Image 1 (cartoon, rainbow, N blue to C red):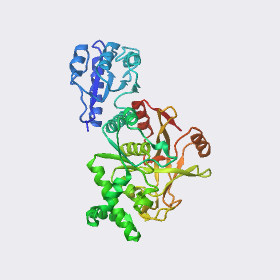
Image 2: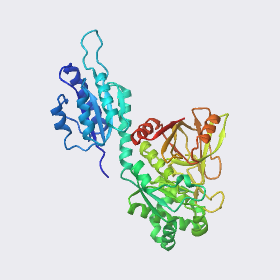
Image 3: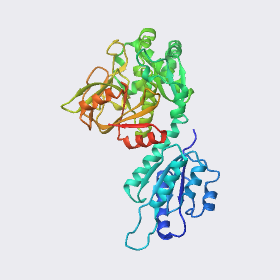
Image 4: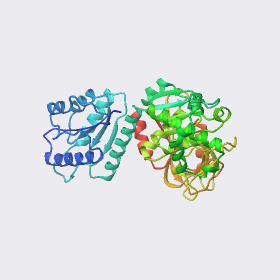
Length: 446
């Protein structure tokens, strides 16, 4: 995987107040290096075109921070935009002193020059921020831009594995390899589910000893599962894990019903829950865009995410209940129950995850949606996960929305959103907005 590279270009001209500009430059370098120690920064401000050329030659950045330390005409920014096929963040500095005297920096006019050049040169989104490096808003914004950029970079070199096909009527999760590569940079792999179940069938029990040890250390009441299903679960988990490791896979979209019940005899639900705990984004019903949404949420939050259907709403509490058959990561289970194990609510075969999810004051509902014209959009919804027990057989959480829930659900249905959603255990809305801008994807914030 290529390392994410940030390049800082502080441009200006020597006719403004260089003492103020130098102070801003030094504070900006300090901030950038605190957020990304490997960022490439110049030893001094780039106050001539020659100095700019010497600094940017032979560079290959993923994110370019263009900052007007003073005013600079569009010649400076044009040279930067010509040099790189990267994402650009334009940073305007606040005027340090307004006292009726000299204009110290005039960074804002420089930003308009740079913005005009970008608009006419690039068919892309320009990221922007205004403020001084010591401002908390700027520090937070820059951190989120770098984090989103790293997620974009991670997608550009990741493998996402589709295991089997989506069931009939679930085509919304089906992905094409070229479409996935073009829009997200993701390499889409595919394998038939029977190839993995056949490997599991032929695996000796002792070959799944490590999987058995890991599962037993995480899952509560696993020993109550029928012995045959328990052993088959260990084997399937072991096979999935090996295939994922051997092929450098970071996310999977796995077929589940009916094959794993009718052909293999043991559900894949528990396996997907274990993989989510292992840091592999694992979605069921072969939902590739659900799996990618999970991966993004995991990268931004540093925690496992939850994949579920919206199954109930409560106007009195302003909540939506998200539920699924039993694939939640063990670390998301309520502390008073732990990661309980059960059987599938419809097929009555185990093991599956069987618990209510823990609460969180900050949470985000997220989904990569595919529109009728083939373009993509991001659904973003901020809220809170309430302290509620399991709502239905399987795994579930109760999400309190900021907008009024019934009109919200009405609008989501009318807007044609898919029935699978990702719940992230953090407020990642701004990072997701930035990522959408970087990917030139529509933002739908509710």
